[in-house]
Picture 1: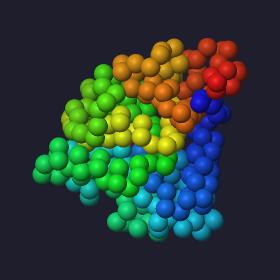
Picture 2: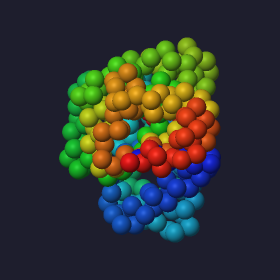
Picture 3: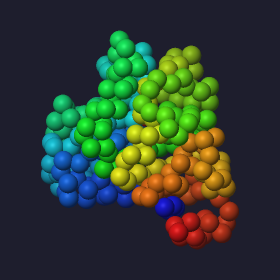
Length: 253
Ligand code: F6R
């Protein structure tokens, strides 16, 4: 369930190859999608391969993990804009099958429930892509999130707002609330690929390795999923014990 790759580019190649293979086998697959810096090379690689192979993506359904509250889909920092920019505009998706939470929904709680129900009706994700926050969050499920949490509105931690301020003009511009899929929707996916790249993720990857499943480090929950893989590059693996770094298969059991 754990693999170390030389760099982010080789993880992107591996994940995009997995995506292509899944979609060729099941063109009507349901994908759970993430945003953030980690996913950019993944989508770039996927778009290039999909074009090369003239992959039919028109029957795919997707559900994004999260969206900021208060930003409309046209806002350049919204996750909706991110998805259009990095993925959706490049291939012939059926837009009606692409789902993102609506950060401007008049009743955010009702909208969150509907989003969760819609995912269920579509049969849950065949494959869920995840990045991980520097504090171990997945989606925007911050440390301490109960494992039975569902799609809902959450307050972003100061750490997350600071980490994400690199995408905004300063920390004060980062929204304080978001809608996120909960731990339940994430764990319902049939297969999960979590990617952690870069030195900044090394401390939390080492914590993940050292700890049993704990709500204090949300992505430890993946240790309970029968088909979850954690893919890290050498930089993100740099604080793991040498015995693991030089023999990653030690963790595969
Ligand atoms: C994004 C998401 C977040 C990010 C995480 C890592 O949709 O759900 O959990 O995956 O914050 O972000 P980056 O990749 O920017 O380090």
